[in-house]
Image (cartoon, rainbow, N blue to C red; front, side):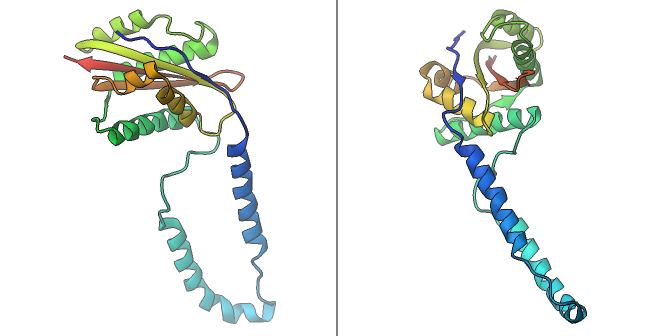
Length: 204
């Protein structure tokens, strides 16, 4: 059962935060530039402008300019879902089938991330054999692997973790491995750091 090293990612800059602030500034500037017509013209112009405004609103809401951006200040569920999406995209780009998501494996991954975030266990693979045995009690598997990561200060902690995994030979080997099941667990420490665990398994 392959075990991998542990990437710890810390921000090398605040480009994500700068982009976020720039976006908010643009929105404020847009609303500042809107001027209402004089009071006497409002009854005449508003019925004419409302259909146009509605069309513009619908266009802005349905236009697809590319991948969905990560949520700002994401919660645990959003980070877990984004890790799964990024891993699925990476495997697809490399001609590999997507993993099936297992609730049993997800529970074990979440338990480990929570234990690391709480300080119950160190940032490590401690207890991995026990997690595999717990999974085997409910799923017939032939092998398993595990990736863990910890990062803080990123607006997209899922991307930071997955990028670090892909750059590491041992972590990438798990992601590209001959597994068909996975589960991701994320927990946040009292200081705001994200602890991420992804477990991989091969069903019999």
